[in-house]
Image 1 (tube, rainbow, N blue to C red):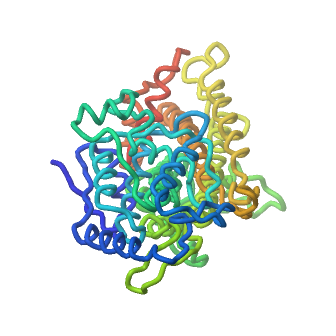
Image 2: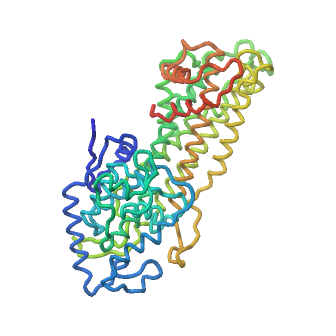
Image 3: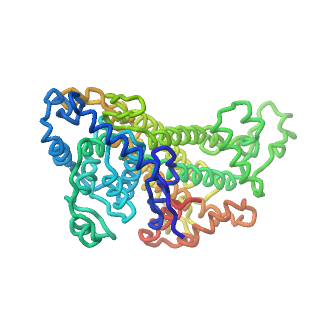
Length: 515
């Protein structure tokens, strides 16, 4: 059944953006009240031109704002802005990212403070609903004045120029529009070029999708951690509610609670009561046959993943505000009878939030990699066969090479951990003297999240081998058994060495689906 999401500039949700990207039957519609407000603002803008200097309307842009533009050239000025800024380079970014950015931009314009026409809103709405997705190169944004270069490529397509992806085929946008019986060109009105590209819609749209993927990633990490604890018969007091109440960080408590929910149906965790002193206390020093507590990557899961939860929650809150904000300049406030010149286009909020999230995902990746190493290294775990060889260690190599992939991918994430938010190179004739790098920040975060999925997939494969070695499936928690069975549907147990390159992506794929 098709679903329609109404845009009014104030009530767009992250899950709405995800739904639009994932399901082609979901459409958007600008509310009639938003159309009326936009018309009112557009009329106000036109009436304000007499005798007033308004940035980007009758002046040049950036440092050239000191140049006043003749009234007969105002529309040409807007088209020149798009032509000059559609200069991105590098690989095209994901179609999903482009669609998300378009939705956020339409919602921002629908707020009614940008002075654009109904025709432009309907044009953008048509592109979204028909999934006409402009080709947008990855390089070009510094995240102040927003995502100028990337958004210019979207604007260029609205004008009827450049290439788009339509029905999975790259082709000229003019050809697509002609096929759909739509005008092949669009003539920008005053301020419409600036309104289309001035703002944080690209970084916000990408961030909305990636924070959702990060939330799913966290759930997988918790589930993997639970299965790992079950495989070593961990002590249950490490997730005890009394323990975590004594350090009342929100995320830590939530992760511990999730683990307790999983363990409620498990028969593999132990009570510390099994550790009794007995005759050991009769000796001055007595070595126990096993450790009284697990290594940190098992014992400290709530303490390590708690900050990941909190970073995701913070990012969701910031993104939720951003996608319903007016982020262009100047801002036309009809009610106040004023045109504000400011900097709502600056992307520091998104850059900061997504960098914090990225760093916690790097730590999540390290956590997973360390558990992989624990289970594959017989000298540490003292129980499992080397590299989880289930048949004949030495003759078969098991997961030895797969650990290399986990190690190298984790190292990649460690390199990407540095906050891009901290980079600021002045540009634009030093007009943009402090920049956010927000769009690049979210693209780096996307890479880190994808890498983390790979490492967690390798960990799940490792844990699956451990389950098969111990033959304790009937004692696993319901959640762990379900995850194990899902794994085995796409990747049978690795006994004899075989070529895995076609199977491994399937494991990553099943993890990327919301659990």
